[in-house]
Image 1 (cartoon, rainbow, N blue to C red):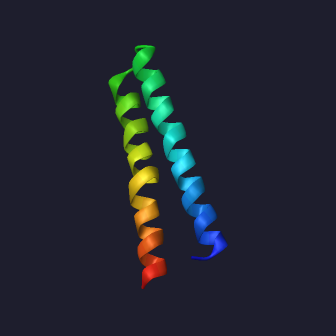
Image 2: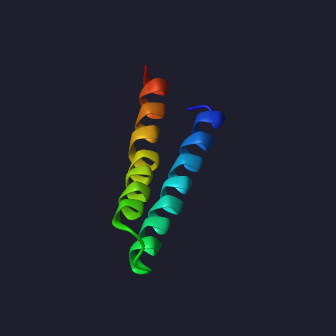
Length: 60
């Protein structure tokens, strides 16, 4: 695995956890549900989908 792909994966997971933290904070502070679910959906994208796409692109 190249260093660039590894850094991209680590950055993606970090951003995903940041969005997940934002989703939890928005829920805790009673913000609208749409904001909470949007942040959560973005977090799932950054934590799971993007790293899997990067891993598959390296494997192929």
